[in-house]
Length: 203
Length: 203
Length: 203
Image (cartoon, rainbow over all chains, first blue to last red; front, side):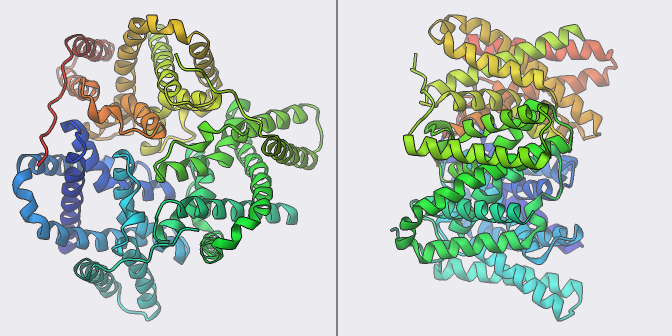
């Protein structure tokens, strides 16, 4: 539980910082930066909650998350010239957050008795769609659909692994840890080796 | 009922294929194509369910639809050079799907006791707003608002017809069939004759 | 109550007219204009209702609002060459509507027992995010995040004022009036003096 909270906050911080950095490239004012930071961090979970009908959506009940994200956005702005050196730390937490958020989505799907493909989709949405809303707001085609880099793909693979392990009747805690580490590991590897999905040749 | 299921699946297939083809023009990877196919097919119904408060939204409970859409996206990619010849078949199902989805939206609105204008709007959203989300994700002004071609307009007219027929106390089944055929017919005619709404001259 | 209804309708009319005018710059057909007018007016409240779980969302139950917005869009189109002279009237109602919608959002947040920061955010979303959806649909980076002009900022400040006044145990009616007038006043001042938030220098 303690570890989970730590990873969760690490993921939120990494997502908020990456959102702020993306927004700074687009000439937004400080309010715009904060909105993009919020949306990148909690957007995926918000869509998840809206799809399964969990209201009020979670972040809106939790002012600590909101204040954390606003603080991260402020800090990112103030230290923007130095934060590029934190690139590796951010990527580390981003990949860990990816695993954690995907797992959260899967568990929420199971809790409302969705079928297996939908649980995997819900995990992927939770982990990836904050970035999609960020890109829509910044008026770009979502990076998620373009660059590959196995961002969504590792969430889908991690989701499949989760249900395979469940079939093998491992303990719940062990399944969680393996799923997070798998997503984190494959994502880290994909970044290092620059692996991506094939693009489709046009007609 | 049998016929309904057939039309419903035909519409989903046509929407998924058209989404995939739109996405292929934009340099997306295979994951992006599948997301756009999903969104084009089930996006309108998802917004409808979110507006009236039907949770979990319908498609997420139904893995057969998800697998169908993914299959259609795959097939469209593989046979992309030949699918242009299927253009007429796709347009046929697209227009039929338009009628069917609009009717679904109207019926859902009636089921939660919305007033008549809202039912017509809900039908139009169900039929048309998957394409709107598709265009937003592909970073374009939604074609729905630009090209005319009586896409949304036929849904609105079909909705008005539905309530006129209901006032005339026809049987429910007959009203459904007439509404679908009307939307299908006018849409097909609009494509053939290239009829569109007037654009507004700028100031 | 009477006054509230008057301000509410004034705000809706101003938002619908501004949406229509923004859409006319983008070559949309008449249907597109109406959708943009609807979205600009009721979009913020729709996101609010979706976040807190109030279903069906409010506007869909209220055909008078829908018909009002459609009428405003029509009138704006017909009198488009003259409506530029109404600029000051529209800005007046737009600023008043801003205050009113922000207050509505705060009150809805309190009604579902959200914490104070979330209530303020909900007020800001109610007042500002119709314009955000409008800009997404028109394929632009939301003006809200760029121009400054203290649009969202006055809603946030107004929200803080609301809760300060509540701590001082003023009567509910008085708090409402002061909050609306504060938002209206600061917004009007910001437009006149052309005050805006600082932009962040890029790295």
